[in-house]
Length: 264
Image (cartoon, rainbow, N blue to C red; front, side):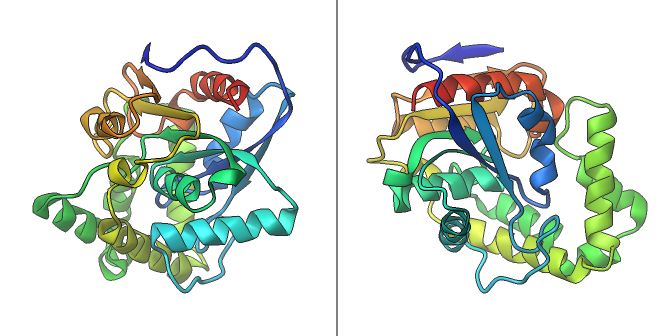
């Protein structure tokens, strides 16, 4: 693991709510091992996006700005005024949008392998479209679907298998229609949104960027583009880790987020 940028955290340990936003096609359960490794001073709050995990309700729009406003509504319902906001994958893009739309409510921002850091080219756009169409995903053979769910992992093991199992249940279970609709529309919203590297220009919230060196979905070079507009950000690369750092190396991620919370 290598780390650069940013200043040392303040030497204090204040209880904080840490909002945890999951990635594309995942659920709040993806953060379970990270939350379990948090110090007692941190209070994790992991949400299921509409159509994901236990939240089977449909949503009108799935673009990052609309989902960020949905998150703000969820925080209001829970009486949470401010939080350290952390997002993985698609959740990272939405977390970044929160820092733009409601900067006063974001104490610090952690982006773990965020999607949409840069604009997607024609070829990548076609790939994302193909892998997210409801009709194609719903008709895919089980073996193909399992392989697709496991794509992006560099660390094998029980947690990867659990993720794939949860993904299979979501895509083939009683609420598959809602899950596939959310997947397709979230990808469409992501592809049409401005890149996060530009969106974060002008923000001042303490920022941590985390990426896996073996991430094929949010490559380090894409994540590093955010440093072009936020040179003050702290950047950490996790050697030998893929796209799913919260699942692959949860203790490392928990440690980094605990340090981030101290900067808030």
